[in-house]
Image 1 (tube, rainbow, N blue to C red):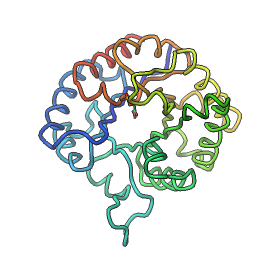
Image 2: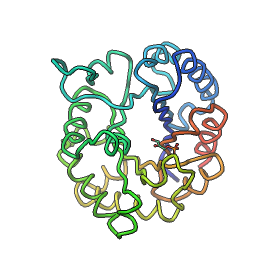
Image 3: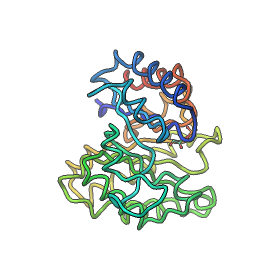
Image 4: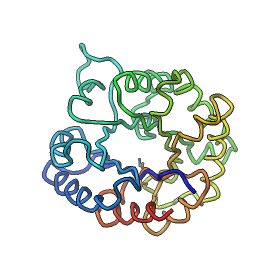
Length: 256
Ligand code: 13P
C-alpha cells in the first residue's frame, strides 16, 4: 500500500485573477470525489491568492499554496511578501527553493534554509524543491548536489516540524522541456533522498515525508512515475493550468 499521494499544481507566472478563479473553480469541483484519497494543492500567483482562497473556502480539499515567500516577517523589504502575510491571505503551505528561484533569482541554499525555518514557524507546510542541472547530471554530480541542497536547507528543522515538510525532486533539465526523468531515474534519486532522511532522522519520520517528482508530469506519464515505491506524487507545472489534465493526474494518483 502506497502513502496517500500528493498532486500539487504550480501555476507559476500565469493567469489573471479571473482566469485563476475559473481554474480554481474547475479544480475544486473536480476534486470533491478525491477527498481523503489524494492530497491536492494549487499555487497561484500572489495577486490571485485571495480570490482563489475565496473560491476554495475554508478547509477545502484543495490546499492553497504560495509559490515563494520572504523569511523576515515585516520591515523595509520592498517587493517581498512574508510568510505571516501569506498565512493571513489563506495559504496553508508554500513552495520553497524552486529551481526557477535558485537559478533565475540566485537564491542560495542559505536563503532557502532561512525561508524553510520561517515558513514552518509561521505554521505553513513547506514543499522544498531540489534538483540538479543537466550539466551536473552529465558530470555525475546529481547526488552530491541534491545532498547539499537537502542538508543545508532542512536538516536543522526541529522534530516537531519535520512532518510538515514535503520534498519535491525536480531535475532542472526536465522542467518545462517536455523531457521527463524516466521513472527509474526519478526513483533512484527519491530512494537516495529517503535513505538520507532515514539516516539523519528516524525511519518513522522519513517514511511520513512525501517526496514528489516534478518535471513535465502529464497524464500520459503520471502512472509509471507514481508506481515507483518512493515517488509520492507530483508537483505539476504546465499540465496544472488545464483542469482536465490536472484532474486526470489526480485521478491516476487516486488509484495507486
Ligand atoms: P512542468 O510540469 O511545466 O515541467 O513544471 C514543473 C515544475 O517546475 C513544477 O514546479
